[in-house]
Image (tube, rainbow over all chains, first blue to last red; front, side, top):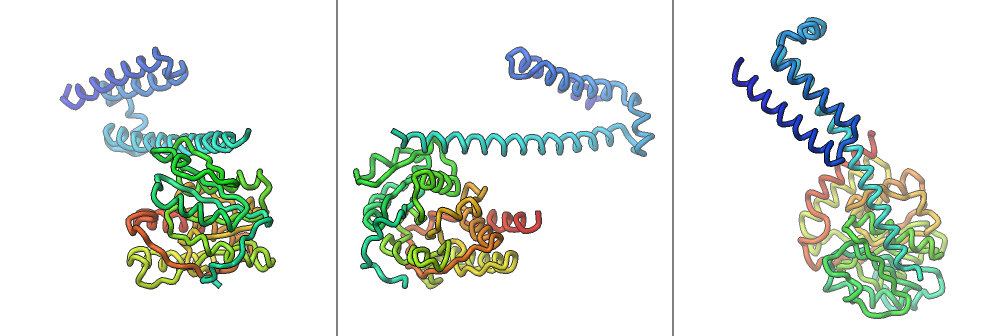
Length: 109
Length: 231
């Protein structure tokens, strides 16, 4: 086992603990917790057994498991960024409407 | 047209002056006191200032202060003012800054074309002489050319916030920009909706060249324009 694999495993264990913590605090719903657990477990498997994703590498003509991880990571990051953007815009709009309605309501007798 | 300051008050015309303000403790009081006799009502939108602005304003009949509990930006403050004015039944709104850059004495000049049915919105236009900081002058010229090129709307000073509009057209030009892009988006929407507009010369006043629209705001407005045109 090489150093980078050990580091990746520590990271995975750390993130699993964090996900569990958020779930216990009620900040994650069960589905969200399961979703993140699948991600972390998948990462763990790929880190320990890089050959487990060989069929994906062959299908998409990717030479190394590391490249698959990078490509997959970038795709997921774009997805998460987009989702964050949408949520942020929605929250901003709701906040603006709330602040406005409170301000206008102040004036009503 | 712009230099007349001794016209009689416009009372009885359903005119409201909307003044968005954020942490403006020095010139707001004077702006409000000068504007009040020229309109039927003044509404100040305190956009989440550190200290509530109401405490720094005189008690005047026809003066309303609405306070945003958090800072939302100029565009959002104007929207609050216009929604309040629409609910209150006013017909014309004058938008002016709180920092003394807009001379309230010019309010009658801005609303005259609306009352004479010559336009639905008027834009106050400053002269780009040496009184305007160089960065503001260059930025304004570039953004104005861009608006003309991309949207075929010809307004000489796109970044002046001194404007008057008939409240009946507000829904047609309603903007989504919450910050300084609001001036430009308003013009873009006027162009898209083919709303009759008139330019009115106003004084060029700068008390503090470090306040108001910055270079970063200019870049943001530029990017927004590209998005409004092509996305």
